[in-house]
Image: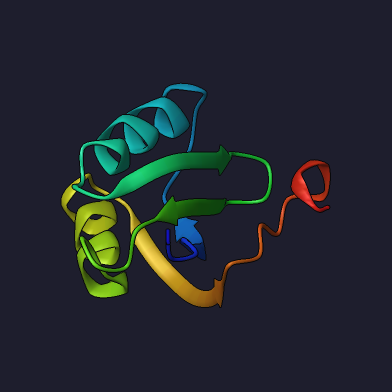
Amino acid sequence: MKLPMQYETMTVTGMKCGGCPIKLSLALRGVSGVEDVQVSLASGEVTVHYDEHLTSTPQLKAMVIKTGFGVDGVSATSGHDPRPDHCG
């Protein structure tokens, strides 16, 4: 039985141009256990879909910071994708 994946939505600071979301997305996708990343430059939000047995909120935040951005807030939900087009 496959366990539900975690979703983290973080408010990221310091994204200034269209290249920032690409840079951040690639960095987060490189973290073990990360399945999907959605980055919005307009809202400054990043949603990460990941396996909580392979990574954690502190590891994701550390990667955001290592990539050169800040993290204002983190909210976690288990097994529910917050993106409207994925609710079902």
